Length: 224
Image (cartoon, rainbow, N blue to C red; front, side, top):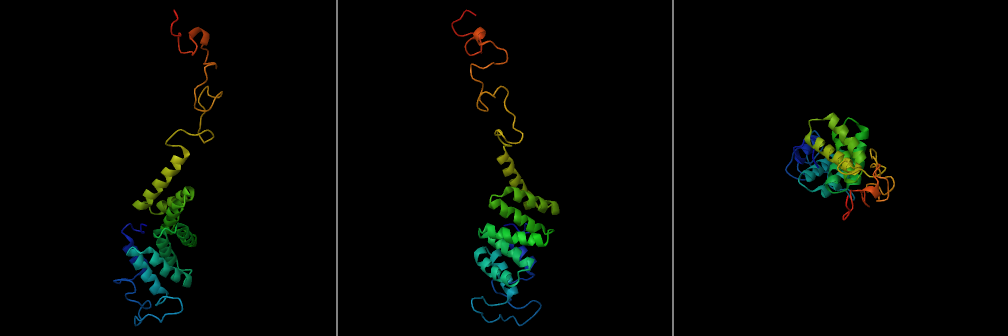
């Protein structure tokens, strides 16, 4: 999934975590200092603290391991449920791992906590599209584009969702009966929609007996 800037996952991980490192677990420790020694393992928990899980999860995501990242980030989110940065990074990992419903819920939580978060609105929109809810997708992608109209992947996602909605509505083909804007063909009320009238119906004043059995002109073999 594209990051906030379109520059790749690594740049986003660095932006939200505020940390570098050369691999999972590198530079472990508490923010702002500490001796860098991770806490002892607790029952069923990975080594380190919440911030360490977040950093390592972000690196795993940037390295293309979303499922492993999701495990660490889910731990961090459970410990710090009000951290929008953790939940948003978890949502990205879930999206890349194919867990679209879970990703949508986390993007949604971030967007509801801060409606001005354009990336959360974007994530909500693309996750909804993957789940087939293109109306919701269009709504939140439009919000993301309105906040950051210069972001190419926001605009591209919105165009794709709107094209899908237009195709479903019949913009690229004949509208079906009952669809908004559908007009019944003239003279088709006596038969199935879209079919020409049967040979026995009035054709706007043409006399079938005078012009031939099918109303198209003199019948073959006549002297007319």
